[in-house]
Image 1 (tube, rainbow, N blue to C red):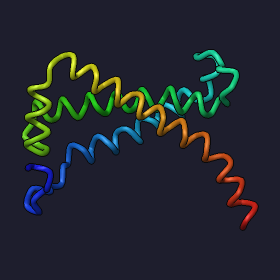
Image 2 (image 1 turned 60 degrees about the horizontal axis):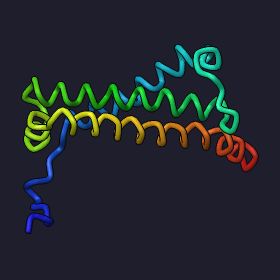
Image 3 (image 1 turned 45 degrees about the vertical axis):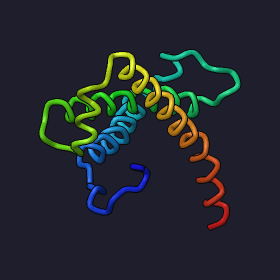
Image 4 (image 1 turned 30 degrees about the horizontal axis):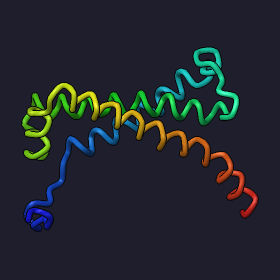
Length: 129
């Protein structure tokens, strides 16, 4: 039925790893370089803190960028899982846009939660220790 994955089908995907590392590094660069001026660049959303808004915005950008890099590597190099390479090269324009929008929204959510939780958790750990 295709639902079960054979043990020999599970592979390490260097492109996927590269994409994840690029996403976190790019997020760090964006927050370091543009974070101090962020409130000037983007209007404040009244019900969200600046940190969360920054996480949402920069997380979205970093996730979109890493998805683009991954697709480029799958399509134009010999690296990566052959199934992912095939999916990347046969994806329609509509499916490609849907994928990028989905990655962007997911990245915004992950980094928004990360920024929103890091301050309170840091304070809590400081109080506990």
